[in-house]
Amino acid sequence: MNRRKAFTRVALAATLAMGGHAMAQEAKEVFTIGGVLPLSGPYASLGITMRKGAELAIEEKRQVLGKPIRALWEDTETKPQISVQKANKLVAAGANMLFGDGASIQTMAIMPVAAQRKIPLIVTASASDSITGANRNAYTFRTSSQIYAETQLVTEYVKKQKMKGIYVVAVDQQQGRAAAEAMKVNMEKIGVKILGVDFTPLGAPDYSLVINKVAQSGADGVLLVTAGADSSTFLKQAGQVSLARKLKIFGVGFDDNDAAAVGKDIVGVQSVARYHFSYDTPANRKFVEAYRKKFNEYPDAMAGNAYDGMKWFLEVVDKTGTWSSEAWVKAFAGSSPSASVFGPRQMRACDNQAVGVGLWTEGVQNAAPLPAYSFKVTDTFPPAGLYPACP
Image (cartoon, rainbow, N blue to C red):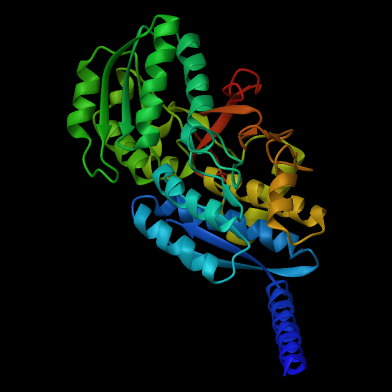
């Protein structure tokens, strides 16, 4: 009987081992990317072009660790609770990594999912300092910019324009409030007054009261900390009352979608650029050409960052030669991409934040084949001094 029991135990163990091996092999038949993006709602424009940029990087890479790449996309509707539901759904479907989200509050909602499931989360859009700051975890990496760096760039612009007072309009979310607080500190250091701060709801349809307050404030400029539909709504309504004739309008993330929506009133508007197709590097020229060929349009900031971040991470995974997510995370920390659209970049191992050149742009009118209205890179800033000290 004992021998029978022993044989049964050995047989059962062998069966389970074979079954486990088969499951592991099945998981390795394809490298699966779980995309958690706002494809509807106020930030839909971000999610749609993020997906395009990521898809192009996947198409170019084709394989990871000798296996084809599969991308699964889920719409978070610009709602944090849905982001969490969709992230868990993708992990259950076999995602080897997560990619997303749009708004910072959504990204911070799915960061614990990545940490609990021990799979990498690649962030290429959300800018809240907390993502790589107070709320950071070992599995979340941001390849795009952060609010701290963007407010440093804005501060340099305000100094250069010799402004004496500014007004701040920010989306009423963690990212907007963090930027407003950072600007208060920065402006105090350079002796510039903040003459008013307004926090507006996500997806606000009417900025007329806020714009009137800005116009009456006596400020030399207004800083807008918004994205997606919020940016274009403000800029269109500001154009209707010729706000730009009274003061400078500048932001931390205006892009060519805003330029197309606003039209002629975008000319002269200034912004930090999280990416721009006009930035002249060999890798960016190649990317822009490929993107235009595939989608018949110029890439915006969300597309450029998504492409660059996805390409960078897949390259690192491939070089590890292993299916261990722990090995991927370890390798990505401290890595540099072989050819970034931004030029030289590095992932800081101390906080999983990518650092690189800072871009400044201005709204312009163009001749064909360029878009009728777009932004254009007018200045660059070295990474030194743009990012907070390592924690």
